Length: 340
Ligand code: TRP
Image 1: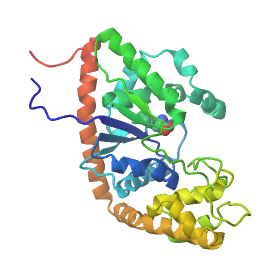
Image 2 (image 1 turned 180 degrees about the horizontal axis):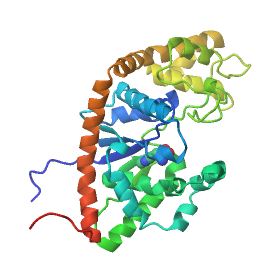
Image 3 (image 1 turned 90 degrees about the vertical axis):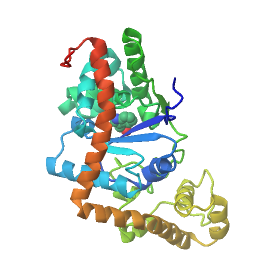
Image 4 (image 1 turned 135 degrees about the horizontal axis):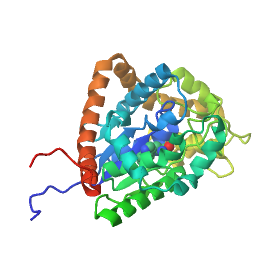
């Protein structure tokens, strides 16, 4: 009987690439929603530091960026009591399951991945096995936690399909082992914030022009400067229209930051002029981000506290991961050392 079993929340898994800062686009498009659903799911966020190794990195810089990004996510309000936030490399089960799953994945499947094709063209000087194997590690991330939902961008859709294929293949061979995860490509984060310099493109941390991105921990001065420089148009009326991508993007940001409706903002700033409008947009960002930046700075001064948080996250993650890994090992016939 399952009478007394507390209802289990669905599990959400997402991996975070530890490159660059958390930017306003990701905050509004994803993190902001993650905060709202923390009570509905058991949310697990892994900083995918092993994935980041497919590209050569400066070790000191890499370590610093990874801690900084971890602190930024904590500062945003991901609650360590409700959600699990940890570094992938601290939970050895990822690499282990990845090896096993690799033996259930065909080279041809991996070579067909669009991201592999793009990346291998970009990195022809360092065409390492990691680039090809990347989706298998991602499958391990997801399947280890028996995740029900995986919120990702459409660029990861193919990798998620492969994860499902691997899970189904394994389940067919050995009986139910993995939950087959569903991708969520939008509804858990449906706002697309665009580049400040080319508002027809998504705001992306890989954009080489720093003026196109605002990081959530930038100083008020930097934020105001970047908003003043944001590309608009020459019409000088504030309206939300497809042929005004720059102004519309600023309105989206303004609305997300202030919690006010777009119509309401349009009414107030319609003929105020872009200078006044931009000042107000900039200030709304500065105000909303102020407590996050202050918390971030406090956390970065208290490395031991960060280490405690990351250790707790890793411990909780490893507990769940080990349950799955042990099951997998048993199913495929690896020996164990349990005495009878
Ligand atoms: N590959 C993902 C990206 O580039 C990051 C990632 C790693 C991920 N592991 C994951 C996303 C597991 C979702 C689930 O964005």
